[in-house]
Length: 374
Ligand SMILES: *Cc1c(COP(=O)(O)O)cnc(C)c1O
Image (cartoon, rainbow, N blue to C red; front, side, top):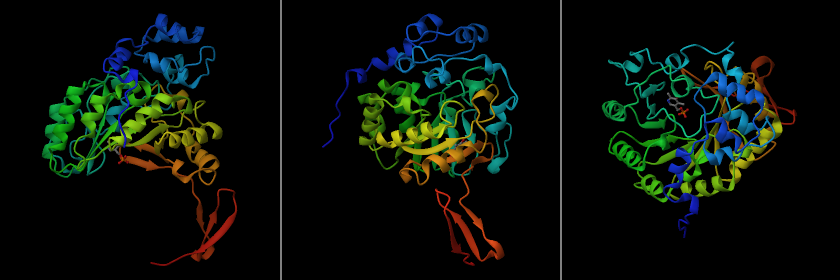
């Protein structure tokens, strides 16, 4: 029988300390790494919101400026360059101007983003314990020049009125930044809506601040299994997966919560076959099921992170499919205003005359299967 074994860092109070002591100044950062002149220049010049938890900062390599965790967290002057990013990206991406999609008769609350008939993304906060530089919501979360009203009650009211919604995905910012009391209120409110069949929580906090997975949070999430909670975390590099992560994923699974991963293909961070394969193997080794790997979205100021469109498909073809456990394979996709669109590698080509399909194995071997008419 499983019994919750509380680690000292899972005591209540520890996660709040991680938030309070956020590493968000040069002085604090210096305790973890030897800052390069470029890093210091970007922090001082850009004056952008940045920061991470002491725990996550401790994963940074003290001397290597190419450390993936450093690159994901420390601002760069490259954020001022923008060739591909779309201005006002989030308004376009989340269909915030349209009121008539899916037959809606009034403007949706700012907190509700909709691309599908049966499910919505419900943004409940715009703060994070750790700010990823490649964030696609950076206009609202980092730059704050897009002012949105993330009012939980207004969002709940909208969901209550829309009976076609059966799946609500909590997002942010980071949803686990809310207090236990507010999370309890939110989950209880959602679970009292008769047409809801499931709740999803998209959070990086188990990774940037595993301390957040406390006994009382597990108690809140673990109640009442008729309406299950699915969590998707956000891991892009194997270095992010530590013993603390292993522990909190184990705890979450034991309360009946499935945990998946949504990552982003990031240039110079995980876009080589070896790192990509290791990332997905290591996810499974701590019981996280890979779900999506995304092409880096067209938010402004993140060009330096964006790999070519084909990259994710190539990495799956050369490092995952056939090369390692099938469960390790994520869906490679791009998230757009009309929904998520798969960008997976093609394994079959229809042969001549429409009589058969030419298939290709992961090793490039050829095989044929017949064309079967309807
Ligand atoms: C990603 C997303 C979803 C969920 O998509 P799934 O493919 O079901 O995981 C739902 N609504 C919005 C607005 C999204 O961006």
